[in-house]
Image 1 (cartoon, rainbow, N blue to C red):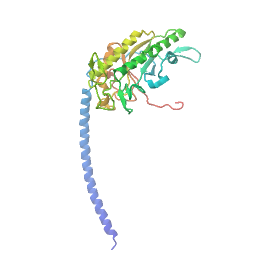
Image 2: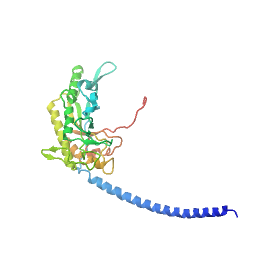
Image 3: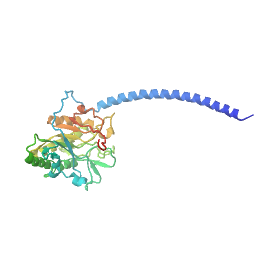
Image 4: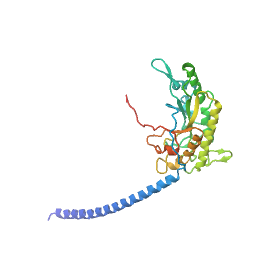
Amino acid sequence: MSRWPSILLTCLALVSCSSAEVKQLREENEALKAENHKLTLERNAYAGQIDAIYRLPRAPKVVQQPPVLFTDLLLCYGGSPNRGELGVWDADRFAASVSWTDPSGVERWLFDAFLAIEPRLWGRDSEPVDVALACEDMGGMKMSGHKEHWQELIDFWMKPGYGFAALDEAIGRAAARIGEPPYKRKVVMNLPDAILHEYFELLDSRTKYWGSIDGRELDFESAADRFAACRWFIDTMNAAFKAAGFKYIELIGYYVHSEEIPTLTRGWRWPWKRLNEYLPSVADYLHAQGQYLTWIPYREAASYDRTEELGIDYTWMQPNYYWEGDR
């Protein structure tokens, strides 16, 4: 007798047995999927409740459209030692952005707003690592900016002959040639992120690191203390700007540097950032002084659709599109 029939019978038995097991596994899998779906719904509902809890309470109010204060905003990166000549903003450098000459040879006004921006301080001889002024997910060990680093950013842009003084001078030079600008040029200042921990990526690093205000050491575990640091920066910057007595420029507000504002359920690394805990208070403080909060998120970044709730007045979403050739 050939051995093939016995092999065939054995295979059929195995197939029969495997089909029964597969059926049982499928039934068990469907039950697990149903249970997992139920747990997911419960988790999302809970997360939504927690997300709402961690938002700072804000009184209901009628949202008003901010006025149109400018049309074209130029980003001016400067403040970090490693930028070299690219970080030098003197009157000659600003000149090309203040006015331009059209094809017919007529000089005209150009940018009417300028954003002073700097995410971190690289290459500092006095620090063993780079100093971060904004929450970053780029990797690498960076020490979060302390009070003296925030002051350093102010000093850079308020240095005589450079920064805002140079911008005012460049506008004055152009005004001497083509007449007074139709209105004062607007200035927006980078507001450093009040980063929760001394080292952004180390959740066990200190939250008491930034410094003191009126003899009290701030603890950035507290949203109120993070707001207090921002308020100190705003007050210090506003006072310095007012004392300078610029003729052609005015400081209209501050800029949120992080390109997303995550919540517990949306965005990247919320436990590291928690910006939504104090930014609404910053916005309220600025509004009380007639100033504004601005932001430039990446495309559909976390909280891009919550700017009114956060108190952000001017938002420009990055297109994140690469134009190639003649397009």
